[in-house]
Length: 218
Image (cartoon, rainbow, N blue to C red; front, side, top):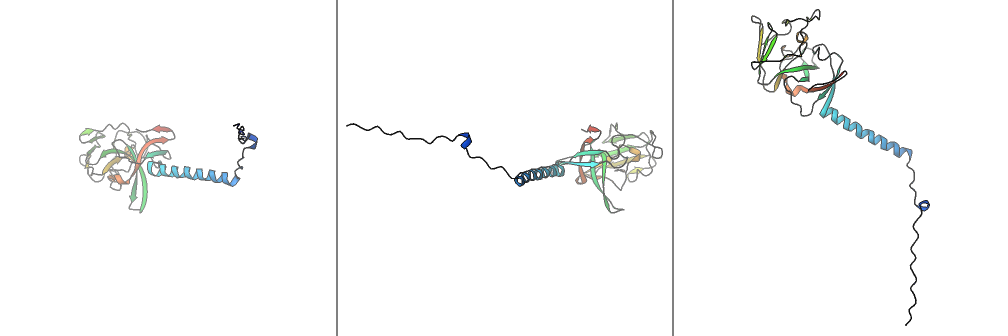
């Protein structure tokens, strides 16, 4: 029996590039919305970083000369920060006289549980009986700002200070640090009861770099 040949099935022709569907151009409002959304996310990330990881602060005063000078900007590491000896830290201080908050920058000399001794006669500091390498400090006359080799006592040493021997002795409470300004004769710090031992919970962070002039602090 003769069979008639089957007709080949015709496949639809593939669309040519000219006949492919074209996407409608996006409206200006949609493009602007994308940029606004991107900016909002970027701002959110920056806020998270500079709230929990890093902070920026400004130096106020002369107490950290010649390491830091007034109006210099500092970058702090705040997240998971634990102070160590020789760190430069920024902390909150409640001024009971004026009922206001202050932010101070000082150097950590000793940690909780350590014994501090400052001999104003020899201008030396010992921590747990070990001489502290005080290479950052400078002694200036508070009136003339001239370099001197003498610790000034008036207005700096109060509690724990023996005026007869010129020696300061104290044990830092646990959970606190003992801080001093590098400009030793021009710094209100842990030697003064208005600052005292600094509770670690009041520390905003440790200085990692100075923004201008750029300097990294380890």
